[in-house]
Amino acid sequence: GQQLNQSPQSMFIQEGEDVSMNCTSSSIFNTWLWYKQDPGEGPVLLIALYKAGELTSNGRLTAQFGITRKDSFLNISASIPSDVGIYFCAGQLTGNQFYFGTGTSLTVIP
Amino acid sequence: NAGVTQTPKFQVLKTGQSMTLQCAQDMNHNSMYWYRQDPGMGLRLIYYSASEGTTDKGEVPNGYNVSRLNKREFSLRLESAAPSQTSVYFCASSPRGHPNFYGYTFGSGTRLTVV
Image 1 (spheres, each protein chain N blue to C red):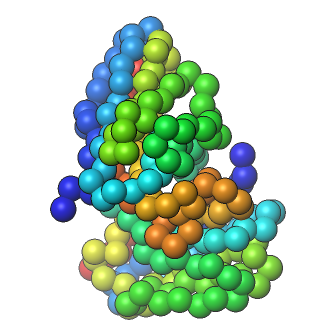
Image 2: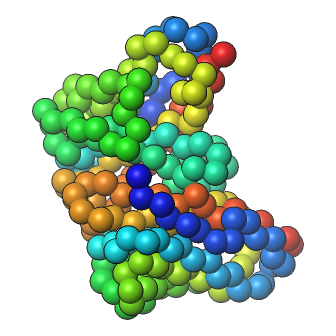
Image 3: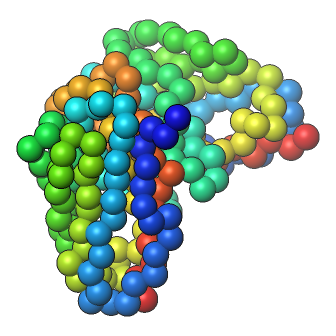
């Protein structure tokens, strides 16, 4: 299967700090999605990106579709305790299948 | 706001036992998916159904079978469970064959342990 590398694997930050994470691959993707997973729950879609260079925001979250189409970035500004969770990127090559990254675990310290 | 409902939420099986994981969605979505989530591995697609009446293998289909019973329901069956199938299983759905514009809606997962 396709390998999507997410970094960092985990982050511990103070409340109010900004967060940056990324997802890279050796393959070119057509679509990038970012999901958040709370403990004991399924992932929930945060942001979807459809073309290279696209920059999309959802509240305090901003994501970008890399120019090379092999990477994507997610930023969270002014983190709050409820941002805690695991963040997954997912990339689509063709067809119905998305490939998921291994996740970035975020801990926000009040 | 039910969305995607999975049953059971937890299950312990002995090696060699069989079971069926149930999934139902009430959003009139065309496509449904089964993923497994393992530590450090992200989510991997087992099987999917692009529309009612069709099913296709994903990345890790071995040891599993699926049935798209109708537009709402998509079940995953383990015929002879193995410890390697210990995982968290997620069902998802999307409104069209290609989940480009809306991504997936996920259920809350089934935590399966095979001993």
